[in-house]
Structures are given as C-alpha cells and as structure tokens.
Length: 207
Image (cartoon, rainbow, N blue to C red):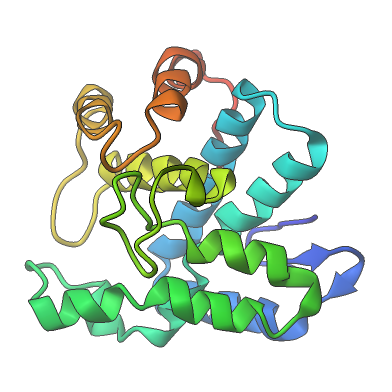
C-alpha cells in the first residue's frame, strides 16, 4: 500500500487501480482540504489500530480506508462540500449519500471489496441511528468503528468551511459524550487514554 501526496495514490495487492486513483485525485483537486483530511484520518486510524493491537493486514487496510473513506464525495456538488453556512436538510441528505457512492466506486474492483464494505459503514452509529444501513453495535465492522472516531476527531480539530476548529479538549469531550451512542465506547476509551496522549507527545500523527 503506497501513498504519496501529489503523486501515485493507491497501489493495492500489486494491482494499479487507475480508475480509483483518478477519482480520488479529482476529489482532492475539487476540494483540496479533503486530501489533508484523508491523510490525517489514515494516520489516526492506524494509531487506534496499533493501540488495539490489530495485525499488520488490518493496519494496512485501515491505512487504505482512511485515505479513501470520503472518495464518494466526488459525487457531491462542490458548493455543498465547501458551504460556509449550515446545510439545508436537502443538502445534508446529499452529503449522506457519499458512503454509498464510495462503496459503488470501490466495488468496481474485486480487490477493493473489503475496503468498500468498511467505507460503507464509517457513518453508522453504535446506537443504530447512523447511515446508510442503520447498523447497530458489533454489526458495524470494527474497522468502520475506528475510522468513524478518527474522522470525527479530525473534523472537529480542524477548521471547516462552516466553523472554526475545536480545541483537543473540546473534541475529546464531544467524543466522550457520544461514547455508547455514536461511537463504540471501548474504542473511545483506548483512543482517549492511549492514542491522544501519543499525539500530544508528537508521535504517530503526521502529514
């Protein structure tokens, strides 16, 4: 698995997936903030995976899923992705389509089926109120649950078009508040106790 900013994006199982590479490059050109966000989510996801003592294959998959988790946003209007005001319900409904769009894009390659399933689940919620399938608890793939926390933490701690970044403390409070409802509480505990202190020591998180 290889990633180089501005260069070759994806090589998986020694198969160059040119179509998927082109799609993700187009997304990054369309919304440049998505590129750095994806790199950070990939790094955070791997840190969580290491803290959970996942094996090398699972860590490699997490790396890829982090980089590709928002590939479905290629199907969303740029005016919605970069909107500075609160989204309308119609616009939010459009945003909610991106896991399914990403799933369809990645499913075009048999080699990417497993990644596609994980990406499909990264906006599911532990309490079953997420999307697109409304999966609940351990029915949500564990790697999806990891990426969900990484994605939320990075989104909260970086400026978005519609709001300024939260502090690390504010973001951790939000994640703790949603443990057991949005997030897997056991993974949240590992994230707060093990992973975030690693970031503060300047280890494990880089772009």
